[in-house]
Image 1 (cartoon, helix red, strand yellow):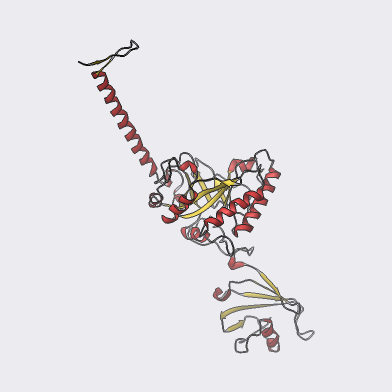
Image 2 (image 1 turned 30 degrees about the vertical axis):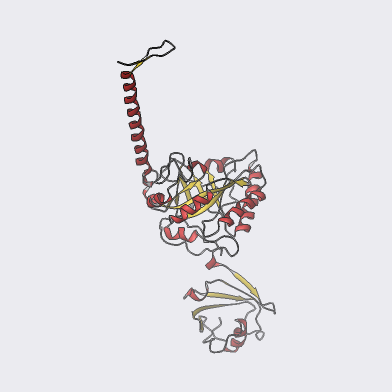
Length: 388
């Protein structure tokens, strides 16, 4: 038997000993292989393993940063899409500096796999809000294309009180919206908003992306004046998903697939927003037109002619069908005493070539001024106009 002697006087290693060590090494390798396979099994966990069945049936997504890149190009975006992920928020900037060396590859990979993408900025409130908004907006515009609204990740106070933090957020959001043309999303933790932000309700007009873990659904009551959330981050460092070699944050969109699609739009000049879904119990149905007039189809408009006559109305144009269009005319060029000083004309567009009144009493002599009021339409366009 061959013996390997050691100089330090310790017990020598025989070939038998070496054989035992080799066997142990094989067992360790096998154990690691089994563990890795086990981790892959965990990667295909269903959303219903984390959240209730209603939310699990809604569009699922992830958010990523450098922590999902232990090695370059380590995310398999096609596998993520095949595993049911429909959107990805990707870290873009932190403070005034780039915050993700893999931003370009993540954007390209996610888009190529068919996922909607959006960018997020991690706020550093100790630094200037406008400078950070400018840096983030530059990144958003450089990525370009169709995107989900840009996100402010707000989870640090850095020594500021609630009033100072609120002022910082408002400055950032106003600047970002001005630069990108999109209404930003607010991301925050429930506990952070309740304590550090003193549960302010100043920002409830922005879509909410809420982080709250180990719950089947976000706990009530909602924070900060928000009636509901638009996105919910329900898993953090324990989140597992196909295509990711590391834990990843898991998210759900509180609406239908079509509503998610509508939130995607261009950035920069000419960008337009679609309101976030209501998050009600009827996924798949679009939110009704906003009473406040914020949506594109519900915008209130006021115009004036040269004589000072004002017109105000609401409607969605030629495709509004039978929806009434109301014109309120405070000053009318009609004989004194014929009509009151303020008249409401309820009319509806039935066809582009005809306008029908729905009033009860007619004043045919006023067809001419109504024709000029509506932009000099020819007589054959004005059919059976009644004024009440």
